[in-house]
Amino acid sequence: MSYARTSEDVRPRDGHGVRNQLRINERTAYGQGCEIVATYEDNGRSASRAGVARPGFDRLIVDLSRGFTDRGQLIEGVVCTADDRLYRRADDLARFFAALTGRPGRIYVDPLGIKDPYSQEGLLQAVRSLEAAVTETRTRSRRLTDWHWARAVEGVPHSGPRPFGWQEDRITLHPDEAQFVERAILDRIGGKAARAIARDWCDLGVTGTRGGRPNAQTVTQIMTAPRVCGYRANRGELLLVPETRQPVLGQWEPIVPPDQWHAVCATFSPGSLYHHRGSGAPRRTGNERTAPRHLATGFLRCGAERRDGGACRGALCAQKGRSKQSPYVYTCRSCGRCSISGPLADQALERLLFSDAQSGMRLSGAERQSWQSGEMGIEEKQRIIASAFVCCVVRPGVKGTHSWDHSRVEPVWRCLDQAAPAGASV
Ligand SMILES: [Zn+2]
Image (cartoon, rainbow, N blue to C red; front, side):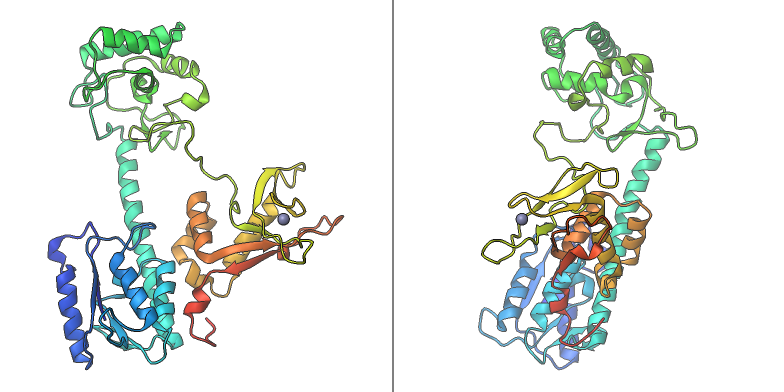
């Protein structure tokens, strides 16, 4: 079977077009004395982002697992132009290898030749490809983030729609709109409701820069945006000059001085504050999921014994703890008989991830570095944990024991083991 994939950002000239790849696969297969019995393709589908469906890849996995194509032809191997066409994520690698090696005697072929997926070398090579792909994905997204950041610290205005109060150049004030904004800020500091200000604007025939009718929310957003006093925000946070910790000043003309912006922000409750969000950030609805605060949240299962002898397996949830050493604890919501110090569980999880003999397969060098330097956010860490563990079972502690026992957290690793050929130790 032959597989081809392009991602959405691919340029036509770089020869990665799906049809090109399939043609190369035909040549490769022919050169190795193989016959292609089925082709699978995913055009314009990223393999590096979670949640992007790849129907072609999914069909390939199904057919590989059952051993034959829709038309009943036996599958004896897979041909592809490069490993990163098939997988750029650990879970896809695991799925692919498990399906490919589900039957004996199969081969994996690329333009460099035939590979034995059952050998340790074959698997190691696949893991090296995965690591290269993950690093490349990370570098690509960091480059873009850096670019936005560099523009932001220079005080370059946001791209995107023209902000209310400024002209198309995003630098010069729009005389009427700027006046409305200034008036609104002063009124608000004086105690006027945002709704009343919005009503005033409607009565005056004011519309948003894209023609929308002002409402309390848009007016609040306009008044509390840091740009009104010349401050620059990026990705939802006020930017500070690294050396001085002073706010970065934008190149545009401000509408009010900083103390008035602070004053108007102070009139809103924290939940409705708009200034800490970037211009493109989604509106707060009040019921959106907040970022998880504790690393092991969602991964811990209760290991306490039930009356019938089975394990409880309830989810452990973070709660406020009582001691300095354990400012939070994870506790079983089902039986309440299993609890573990929050920092202990988080640390145990990290230790498992970093000391695991297979961690090279689960964590790339770049990921490891980013994690340990504190650069990596909790959501990214949890994504990695989710790709490594099915869950971790927590053994109930022994009463009266105060020393930290990391072994209470027992991992249930995800299926990389299944992907490894029997007996191989990596
Ligand atoms: Zn329980």
